[in-house]
Length: 120
Figure 1 (tube, helix red, strand yellow):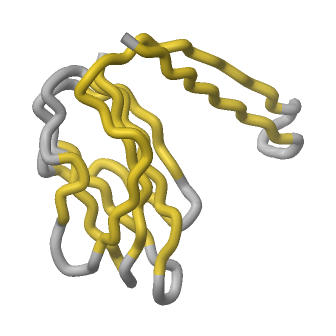
Figure 2 (cartoon, helix red, strand yellow):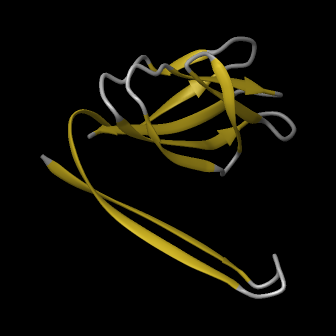
């Protein structure tokens, strides 16, 4: 067993009538299988597997770290359905049920996706 600390901070002075300042931290107990941070090039034209299938409930991190072309983005598919749009620099950290295939398909131009997953 290992621990993984996830922290999210949201701040803004102009998204609403009052300032936004929210922060949360979770210390997660994780086990194998897991994949620390890796990178994968994602091409346009068809979905490519990022995580073939998680065997158990997992925490998944995905970030579009770079792209080519004008305003490229990556469509993330969970279980075959497009669910997430990541522009260059955007990320997501999500809890994911088991037996889910995570795929990416670049739009406009090729992108590089950084990813990792940790099993509970």
